[in-house]
Image (cartoon, rainbow, N blue to C red; front, side):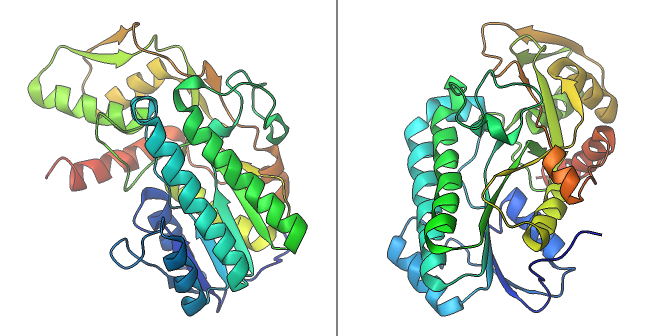
Length: 316
């Protein structure tokens, strides 16, 4: 049994970004830990306002924090709005991490992204690959911001002794996902495309790129479970990879989604569009050795995401 270094029961824990997919999943998971969950919506706290963030933390006095607040999006969103992605993410995380130190927060978990790693990193990608080569050009601005967040946690740990840690999830999906075709990630975008093709009776569905890139996907509730595990059991400066260990090509993913939606159009590929990184799967050996390996099968996770889409998006 893994030793608990930071018990959560009875603690005041702030989940920054609680309305997002990851933040809401973390709130759901923390609901079973006997802790007091603190939240602040955008109307009451602007995370890009440094003075406001500092004042809120000094007043609320959380004992732990999870930073799930970020501006996120897929290849198109990152490539077309680079200034928004780097400025918003740098500003939000800088304000939160520094204010947490000033307020004496006992534990902080910063949520990074697997895109911090080089485009041609060794596969599966170990934590040691960080800063080992050029980034994927289409989302490098977001990646740089996330790398800065990891380095801030390391710096505040080294200089001030803050118990600030970071975790890097693989591609996420699940309840609360973004299904907008202009800004979503590949799995929710495909789920929506197949539903809309089914409703319209379209004979084909066109996807970006070649369909050959290999990806790993993790259900957001599984991520939340891993993050709570890390809050309780991990204290170190190395960022911890959080993946499912299940790898699939984009074509195979599309075919799996067709099966879940129960609609089988011709799958075509627009090769004029970018593929992104050719292969990306995280080496989650470190997390497994710490004692967590609870990711659900991809097909079961897609079925859960499909139910959420039909109940919350398709009906609107």
